[in-house]
Length: 129
Image (tube, rainbow, N blue to C red):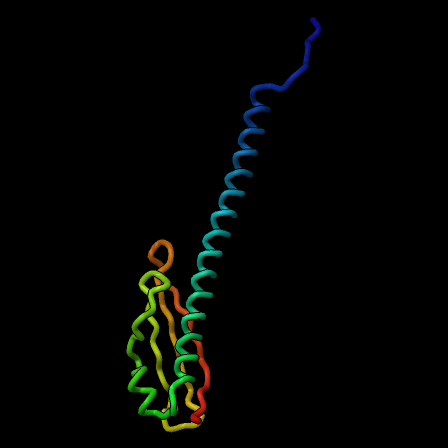
């Protein structure tokens, strides 16, 4: 009896299907992780832009003095008016108000996908006019 061996066996087809499914699931995982990272980076860019906006507003205070800064931006209090990100809060803190330049700490926190909390901190110096 001569055996005709054309085509693939059921076992070979199942092994190929298993391997393809592992590769496809891996590709979807990489795409999902990439999109999550993109969303986190988008939030970081928006947070840093908001912190930069606070710094620019502080530089426009005339004259820049400890009394004027703390009147408009109290130390450790959430700055109102920022809602570009979910549950966003912008907090300004000072190291030493009597120094020149004044060292500023601007912290932006927000809630990302899945309820995870993210934060960006910007440190800069502000000189008195």
